[in-house]
Image 1 (cartoon, rainbow, N blue to C red):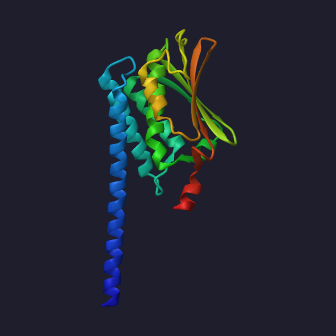
Image 2: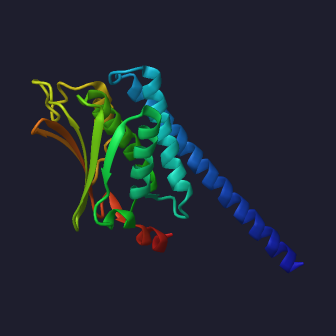
Image 3: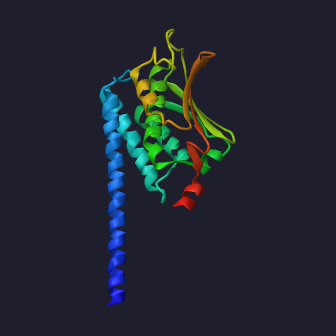
Length: 220
């Protein structure tokens, strides 16, 4: 009898844990959609608003898809970046040249809470570079160091004369959305131009924004 009760309790505990996990993921998903709708009210980048919404929802789906492959709820930054690049390239016909770096990126992951915002930011930067570049081609280059990963998104062209990233002037509100989505710790987005190209640089600090995948596994 005691063994039967113990088995029943174990099954109930497992069920409750699974229900909590599902609720947690649904809540995060709804929060992502709510944030997306609020940010959409700020306006959009050039192009069809429907296409913009599809890109954003696709980014959320990609983030949750990458999370689903992890036992700890974290997201491989390399996998998230690669899938987002592939998704936009295939669906828009954009030519995207991607340089991965030396391999450090593959060992790092985002926390569960940062996955959707970073996916949306990456999608916005890619789409913005594609829509505003003079050739429609986009370069994505990963720069790795011991304390940070920098992802550079560049396109041919120039910044508007009144452009100021710090003061939120001179750019489409698609970038306003990207700026609003930036996590408060360990993530920075900057812009620069030179030699006929515009570059957006997304910097992710280690270990504030990114941590080794193994560290997430050991903590779970």
